[in-house]
Image (cartoon, rainbow, N blue to C red; front, side, top):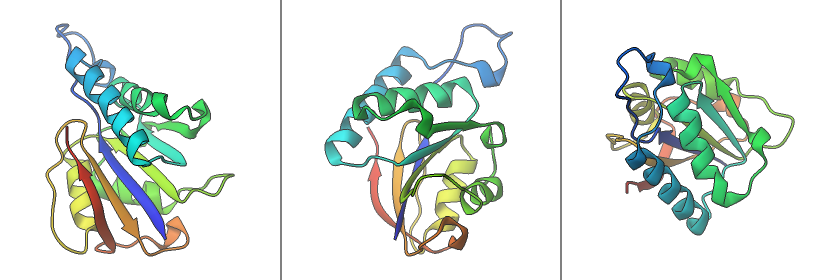
Length: 162
């Protein structure tokens, strides 16, 4: 069995209209959301073995703040350009083709809407979610390898909204 945590980045924004979307930082609210989520996940024992993350500043910052209380090594956070504003098919392929030198039973994926919500809903066997900023869906998959992932194969174990 594998666990997949799907995380939408925390609240972001910038008063600078010339700032590229990919460079938008977290707001103070977003920083607080991510820090609170990190403490909660640590307390609940929801700790990933590896994190795939959008290359957007707001997604990377969210992940760093969430991972901080878990005292995990920095090298488990892998930012990927193809996850920036990715659709559900791209997210699916990123998980399906995921490879690591270590055994990863719990993978966290951090990204953006609408792709993240759509990806989650397409994976679920039943039910649906609507992911708002800094919300996490913990899914379980009855697979031995990430390459075995299929649509409509996941169960929602927990949904966390702050």
